[in-house]
Image (cartoon, rainbow, N blue to C red; front, side, top):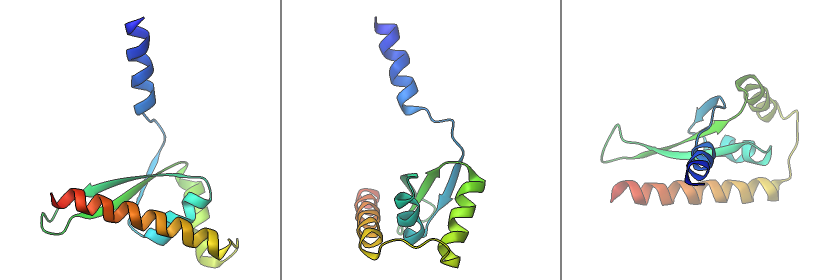
Length: 102
């Protein structure tokens, strides 16, 4: 039984999906609205200024197409929904920065 649980835990935290890394919080918010999973992480290149980036899981070609749709305004999204998603992304970013400075 323990072996099954260990195997199950390993599959929860292991992702084999392609990753695209972004720092633009507005793009991350838009992609979250589109249904992508955004995983924040801290870059420690400069210890005095931790930078938060987001790994977006999904097909790279589809992510690129959705980014192009965002910039070309080919697909409209509600401003309130985008604002809520942006606020959530910024909140996660500031929380990660606080953790990074400790």
